[in-house]
Length: 304
Length: 141
Image 1 (cartoon, helix red, strand yellow):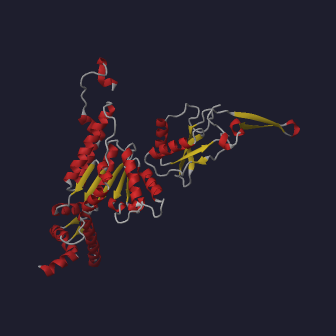
Image 2 (cartoon, each protein chain N blue to C red; image 1 turned 120 degrees about the horizontal axis):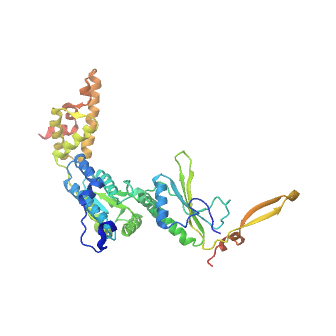
Image 3 (cartoon, rainbow over the protein chains, first blue to last red; image 1 turned 60 degrees about the horizontal axis):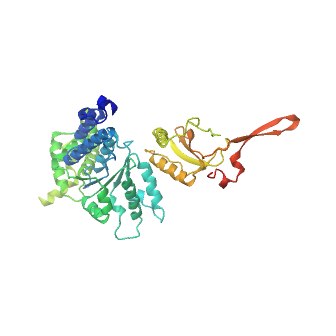
């Protein structure tokens, strides 16, 4: 930065950098604020995204001043129960990293074991490399990464894919970010059997379960995006539904909420069609009975 | 004699950074990038040998540069070109082609004249390099 160092030469005293302006210019604040409203809950996750954004901002300025030598490593692992927003956050992460110039595009490639591991001997390496080629310049999101490693079969081809991935992550010269995602306990097991992965992950982000209140808010947000709304009575019933649903098996946080609302819309549609003439208002209102028919409430009856 | 084929061939050889920038331009337009090599520089030699498959759907130039590096190591003294094809119209059509490596010594071309009927002269060009059989052209001097 010859213009900043001035006439006293390159070794001149401290030159101040307006980080606030840098930040504003990157447009990242707008995006993070958007994120804050569009993603409900997930406070620790948002805090981590903000931290990563700051890190990248600072490292970008350092690079420009010739202080930084290498790019920070940003491979991550996302652990959490089903429906806690891992995939959604991965998309957001790709966008944030792109805006801060860490990766060339905001492309997110989502793969699972089937996309990386081949069926025959010698089939895995080309397959994994092909995926990596497409993912470079963006984010590679490996969903349920622990399926790559099968302890019970030592000749499993998954090991080959793991080795190629580790090699690419090690290099870190490719503008590629690898995100491994999965359920917490199984990821823990995966990392303990593949210690190489754990040490190459700069960020381990845990996704907490949503509280009942957050789930209701998520449901309302989902409906609002599709121009539906809950009637006041339905809102109370929905809160009750969420509390009951949580105690049942296969509860998947936001995904369960979305499915429940999809079914409610189905019932609402049938109710409207059967009632003949309806008001415009009714077309976008989900009533209490649309939710109340759910099996979740049936199960409650014999117990209480 | 310096071979001039494709884009940028009257400029000094592109550096790796410049090649990367060109490839980035191609992939930002959604073009498929291909690497080819040959040791027969005749202008009518249209179809060069392919180094691997064309690379579709890239987001970064890194895989192309890696493949180029591998190709350079395998063919240290060949011509290597990078070409980009656009499939927007429903077929792949060439949009950009440039030389990414050339042999250290390029012997150039000879003009061959032959007498045709009625004192007509037919002209053709012939590369001095192709005097040698394929494996022996452009050997390190």
